[in-house]
Image (tube, rainbow, N blue to C red; front, side, top):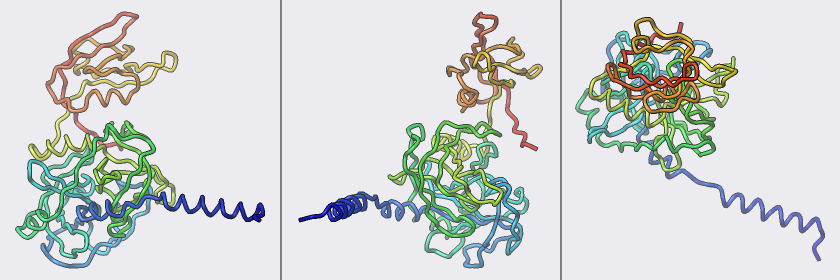
Length: 357
């Protein structure tokens, strides 16, 4: 006869056993992705290419993480980050962050690339870079490096519009110099906008730190959902679970344009805005004098309703409405003024990014 204690032990054993058997093993996915993830090192001066040499152990990026105190690099000024391989029109390229590719403000920078289980370093150069999105595209500069790149499988992009909070994701990179480290977490929020640039980002709790910059955030199928870019950090400097990645859909369009032209041109409408707490609507605070909206007859106090076919409910929708808009494009803007709908066409100007002080 079983006692109640015995029955409880059996039930506990069954429960524990079943939970263990339901645990997911993504080692096969990781094994496929990790071979396509690379390490980027930037140094001041001339790089000895296609070589095996000492690695940088600590290379903080101020733009990636603040207020982590600066460490002293073990070689000339530069940095270290992550990258990954993609294919565009049957040609392979390396994707990373702009702040990785242009560490040390891009002055006399030499870039080297290395891959998993291969100590050889290959010289690379920037095809194009964009400070606003923090995306850079690299290519190999030597025959040996190009041959290596051809042998590395390219990662596929996921549709980031289908990303949802709670979905499981992973990151591979080189946090604090710890090479090809895998971390796991979930998507915390989507459709967010970077406060400084309004670039759309995905928030996650995946542990990423300095050295993860430019690496992939990918799903359980091994497809890239985002490009790891920045985190919010506590005073101690490490990850606190507030991590942000540039969306894959945003990155794809930027990468293609960078390959074609080397830079990104963006349209602007010349407006500042905010939320009216009484109305609960997005309201024009100020308009640039002689700017696009000023020339089209819009005024401060107008309630923004639609821009370029997008309903404006929250300020982030303005960023969404301007994604992909170039200078000198005509777009329709609809506002509500004194209870009357005003719809005018606006010819966009050219947006010039001014870094926050």
